[in-house]
Length: 114
Length: 112
Image (cartoon, rainbow over all chains, first blue to last red; front, side, top):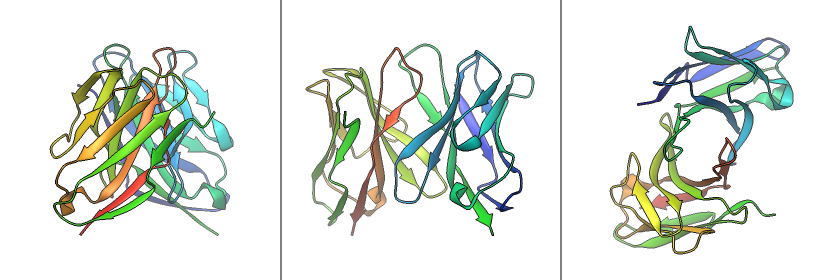
């Protein structure tokens, strides 16, 4: 069975500081991995995805994530936080076969302090 | 293309009432999903469908029923609403040729 663990339900950073949101996955085979962002009262928007090409994946809004098989991690980073980055972020894992079930983490709320 | 749309956006029900949430997608996607989102619990899968006329249970199916009579529509029904079903409901769709799901804007349901 696949699962995702997001470490830290709330993360606070100062504007201009590094953003690091942690995600660890469990899967019997190398999965597809995703980061989604949710702004208040909105749906989920895809930030980036790992599909087994490059292990360093670049997404929208300056975010990137690195797939590390040895650590079963897919942490999300951004060099310099902006106020507009304040949102909730979800890591998700999807198997490569079957009915395409997607499992989501419990989310991390990012607060950006001016 | 409108993508994934959900109707209604908000609803307040009394305990025991019934209602149906409609999800529609215009991308010809095979797979459709219903999730509920609760604080601190992420998104939990209620039911899903791998094609027209097929449905299956997800992680938290109790108290909900679904139907997929047309490929573009996925209905979520609550036969007898309970306060524990107060949540935000998201629909999503996926095609076998792509990787990520596409989400609707959500329906905020309150059961009093």
